[in-house]
Amino acid sequence: MSESVVEIKDLWVSLGHDFILREINLEIHRGTFLGFIGPNGGGKTTLLQVILGLIKPNRGEVRVFGRPPGHHKNKGLIGYVPQRAFADLSFPVSVFDVVMMGRYSKIGLWHKATIEDRRQVLEILEAVEMAHLRDRPIGHLSGGEQQRVFIAQALASKPQMLLLDEPTSGIDSKAQGAFYGLLGRLRKELSLTMVLVSHDIGAVPYHTDEIACLNQRLHLHGKSTEVLDGNGLKKVYGCEVEMLVHGKIPHRVIGEHRD
Ligand SMILES: Nc1ncnc2c1ncn2[C@@H]1O[C@H](COP(=O)(O)OP(=O)(O)OP(=O)(O)O)[C@@H](O)[C@H]1O
Ligand SMILES: [Mg+2]
Image (cartoon, rainbow, N blue to C red; front, side, top):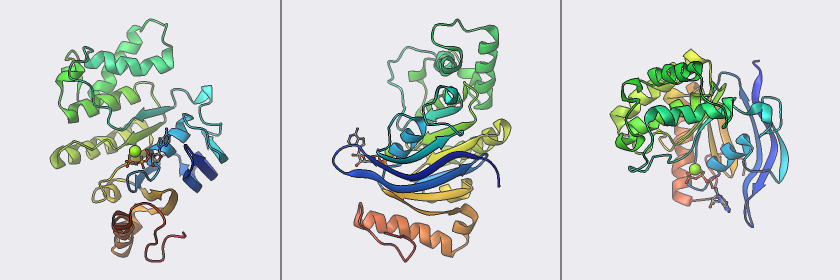
């Protein structure tokens, strides 16, 4: 069994009166591509922010690269593309500079970028096929192009793990195919562990190794190939359809969910 990059035991999180995450147990192994699906408000973004150390759990144990989340040694090891990161059209910063900002988590805000930093930024821009637009203001790109730049920004610190929160929202279906292709290639080239949150239940099982359904509690954490073999797919669709029908918890789905 390969090394665990993320280990979560009995995690509970409340941000207001109520618990948003309940009794979450999760292990993400190095090199895995994990896809999260689940309804709006199910706690997907919250869980990513717990892994990043931005939200403190009320209860439970979380280890990221063997350390508490947010530990200074984890800095630069995790790339994060937040939900709806699209830039304002008037934002006057070039594509190159947006990606360079991602390097500052490694080199520190007050250090001048070196030739090597600039080389690395260009390399990652080439990897996401955006090097030709490096001098363009970020606001003058399409949503799909901006998304590639934000992925480059998240990768600029040479992280070992990439967290993507709904990166395909606002991208047409043809561009989505190319986008998943790009993720697969980056993952191989950079030996990344990847976590993807998406509502695109049709595509997620095809592009990930494992799939999990988050609706306050974690369900159906299993191999995407099993999910794809008929019955499993029905289960995941059942999960999603059931959640759409009944909204947030409590809900039950074809004997798979424990709550
Ligand atoms: N700062 C906050 N204070 C109080 N409640 C919050 C806060 N942030 C999020 N929540 C609530 O926590 C719940 C989970 O939110 P979260 O953003 O994690 O859901 P999500 O699964 O990412 O949803 P979506 O699919 O819509 O992005 C929601 O009900 C939300 O209203
Ligand atoms: Mg979210």
